[in-house]
Image (tube, rainbow, N blue to C red; front, side, top):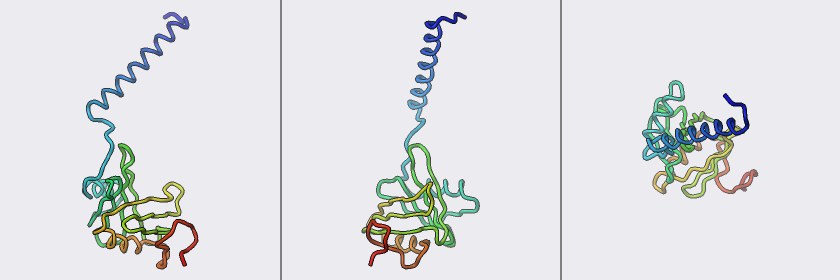
Length: 156
């Protein structure tokens, strides 16, 4: 093989085209499709796959289809599933793991003491919001959890 700069550029160019073609082909056959939750079924399956011993109960999906809450059978834990592009991120929430919960109608800001997932915002429809708000409050660190406002200080 020739070690000339032109030959090296040709090999790099052909390699880049081949990688681009593979990416395009994968996209065309349905790879890398963004996840959306149409109902709690996918979120329930992912939580059961990812979390040892998790058995899904009732669930609710956010208005935008990018998040879902699933109560574990028996109510000991709350499952959270988030759609992140073509991946599904799951987290199980135990009592006391929600550092702060803020509610503004059907919008819930869930704060965790975890730098990997510090805050999640979920919009629920008006019919589901009150019941799921009460369920989430059971997992808050403090029974007197702040329910309004954006600051870190407690609402008076």
